[in-house]
Amino acid sequence: MIISPESADAKDGFPALDLKAVEAQTITVNRMEVQTDDEGPHSDPPPAYSTPPTPPPPLPVSHAPPPPADIRPTNLLSVTKRDGHIRGKYVLDPKLKVPPQMLAPLDEEAGETEETRRNLWLHTRDGFIDADVWVLSDEDADCKCRGKARLGVNTKDGHVSLRLHSTASSPHIPRTPLSLSLHTHDGHVRLALPRAFTGPLTIRLKDGRYRLSPALSASTTVFSESKGTARCFVGDFAGSGWADAPGDWTGDDAEVGSDDGAVYISFDDEKEAKRAEKAEKKEREQAEGKGKGKAKGFFDRVFGA
Image 1: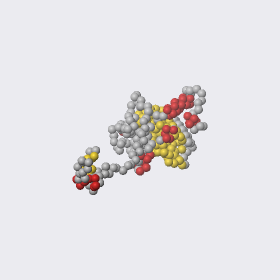
Image 2: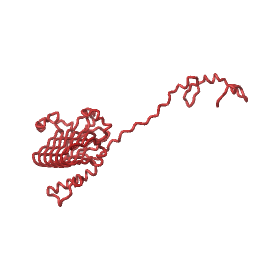
Image 3: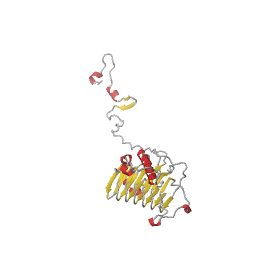
């Protein structure tokens, strides 16, 4: 109700109002004190409306197989053959200290030093490579102090099938980052990366094609495909910080290549990858005379050959 000076006098039995006394009063409304003098309210203005920040993408949850209980962890492992296949399962513990007398000689022709020695090196001149590799995570180490696990896989003449697995107990726990170099001079490559892999992926081909699985393709940004080289980034590129300082990158990275063959890359926990693994096993058995008949190869099915 608005009180005018004319209505401030006593009327209908009500006492007259002292307007000056009313103006000097402090009125309490809903427990907030409001000063009614000429200076106006002393409370702060309401905050400006702003759109809440976009939440980061959910961390990937992996359903990869756990490491075999009957295989003891190793480190700085080197398996080289002049002729023959390499097939095995390996559990790597990058923080495991190995006495120098137990290590293989350095590859001086390749310029290898103790500082660049790989945590795993698989090499054969004539034969395929088929391996499952689990990299143990040092969950107690600070992410800035956690070194990369360096992996090298190479064959002069043969296919390569490599499945990399992380053992982090939760996607919220930092894991050991991977640095992979994989190459074959004559053969196909099938690579499975951990679901949480985040970093640059480079694919080099001279005479062949590459394909990413649907799940990996949905998580990969392709930046260029030129002169047989595809340059990509797997994971959250915008939030990774890699573009700001590529030389100081402490996350994952992988370089994969074949001079004469196709490349197929997926996540290690995909059902499609597991079916392909069974199909490849059947193909190997047939090639070694253990199977019957001639089945259409995995890469023939993938690339429609």
